[in-house]
Length: 500
Image (cartoon, rainbow, N blue to C red; front, top):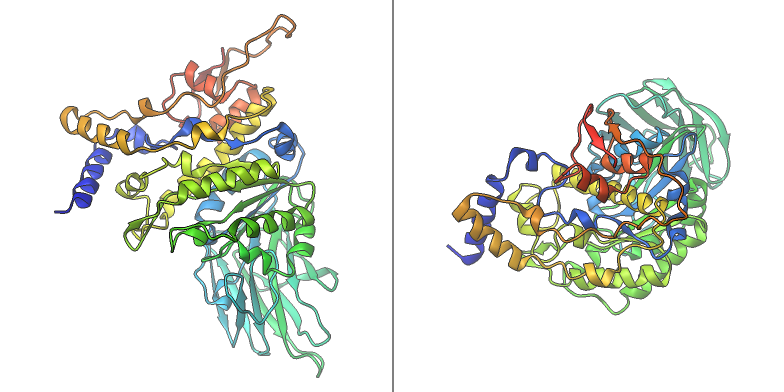
């Protein structure tokens, strides 16, 4: 048996002897949860999040741009659920009839079609049809072409408006949309889009072309949105395209007008895997491509908070990608240069060699690249908690988060060897003791501070998260963990948390 196979076997043993509580917590033991923050230099980097997250009666729109880690909705839908539990439901956001573009479906809806459809996807080197913010375009000249999107359960009543981005010209078919077989009513139309009044709570959205005049010959659909017509609450748009690199955003010629319509308060740029994975190197022109993407996003939504991310260390054809830490440093440096937020998922996920833990815990698809549904949901939870944690820091008057230079060195190699040896001899695992100290120290009270009016106990309610409680009570999340001796962020309704 090879050393690698022995090592993976030992990782499986480590995982198997973890306690039930650890396995079912939001964070497995190897996650560096004390570093799960959106890095920021100044509170103004995350101004919209700080002003709007959890604010009663305020809408908040997130646009999440990414690759295959997003497309199937496992990750963004988990973030969306946690986000909307706090912010309120303003609809699903961007959706795609994936069968028309010959791609795999989302987790919570499936698509089918009839007739002949052609397509463009933004990862392609050449494409025939213009693309917008969603990165996928459906085209047909077939008057009998249809598509149907069937949701696994009825969508919420908040999804009472359908927006269809189309590439208009003098020869387009008229579009007919149906909600559970009932025709959708057009309430607005211009050269870029058509907006329909619909009734939420449906399970099937369907489309067919209608030719009413001889000159009509085709239709190009560049995006669909389900949303609340009054924008009450939060909407988390998923713009993930499988195989997409950074240059994909640059190929989306309709990105800017569509992004302006979406008017995101927060744009998360979650790309990079397809830029360094296959050749295990960072190409000389990648930095400039990323800069152009940041500038394009800023041009469309100049007031949006922008959050850059890095990528987990992965494997390609059985070989570990050793360049992920360098990509992480590149993204951090760009976040400093352009005053954006930065989520170091590389660090939080465990850093160097941590993929073996994810693999042993059965959080991966086995290809060395992709997380499975459970792993993706864990990442989606981590992302939203990182946002909560950073907003809590800022609201508690922390001007900046921990310098990246300290957290970049997150190798687990020696920790893994020690833990495996100890586990085989004592059958006890406590990776939480391996976690480093909290990201920021609490501010010491001064004589000029007002008397603390914080209640001493908080009773956990349904859908509460630890980060959300930190926002409500203005007690830093690190302090909540310490006061209540929490080894993870797992809490349950009815639980009493000390606030002092």
